[in-house]
Length: 105
Image 1: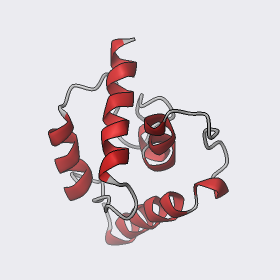
Image 2 (image 1 turned 90 degrees about the vertical axis):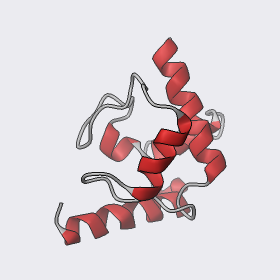
Image 3 (image 1 turned 45 degrees about the vertical axis):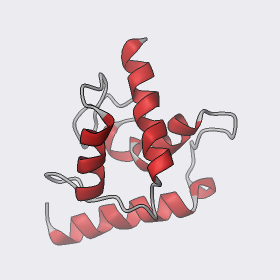
């Protein structure tokens, strides 16, 4: 991934994390925390349902929360690291729970 594309991706993550009300298609306030956080931070690349789009599919979720945290916080391949300012540890936990539930449906 080029440096410019990486910076743009990180900027989009931080922007949407700080201004979720500006992103069209954001889940309502009624949505579970994991679903809302996933839609805000992950769906742009991994697809609305985690089926993959610009990034690989992440449903079914086959990783443990600590493994997901390593990739999310450190980045991997073309995925930039996502800082706690853009996605809190509680939101990350909620996303893993949401994806695990979707995997088991």
